[in-house]
Length: 265
Image 1 (cartoon, rainbow, N blue to C red):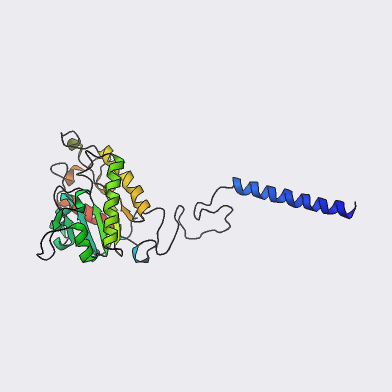
Image 2 (cartoon, rainbow, N blue to C red; image 1 turned 180 degrees about the vertical axis):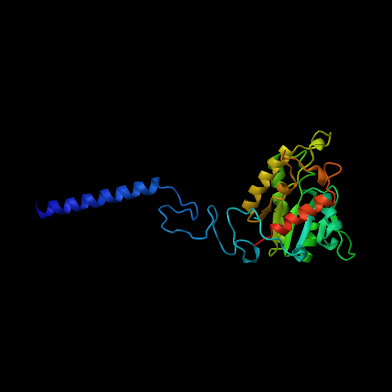
């Protein structure tokens, strides 16, 4: 074999090897943790489906593709003092069971759209102001949002999530360092679903799926507190309510217990 022939053989082998490598790379599945193909790391301690990026969330907290808050050991009740609760009548009720009234920015019948411009908050006797204005002044460590039940009946998923997204954006602009949590819309009792102004738990679940996606898109946390309120039939447990929509003491304490056992990292 001449030297020229040997060189051509070597070149042919190299080209074939590169072609095979390219095909293998194209066909290889992505690593479930880091997303890279042909990953050689064991990712010890990593959770599949998450991507750690420092500084993406307020306060330097790591961001991840999965923003649902997980269960931990129960926090001290003082954890609640870090939170400002914004919402409707279900949030107002928490003031009777351990949440300070000056940390509740809520109003009966309020929905997430009107929360942008309704003057429902009074700070230390001040004239009424909007929730965004109150958030700008107080700069809360954690801001927990529980809206939705008052808009769920007549809004479609797209309209609902777009409006909720505007609220989240506005609040984050007013207080960039606050850690924002979107709480799931909480369920209703079975008998309430059939009332003229009632709403089905199926519709609530659909909207919650949209809120979970919104939390991921906005880089904020999602609190699935609805799972603590449902019975095996997927409806609100009767021991938590009297009218099928609002919560009694047992229901309100169940919500707060969920908050305390699913804290931000």
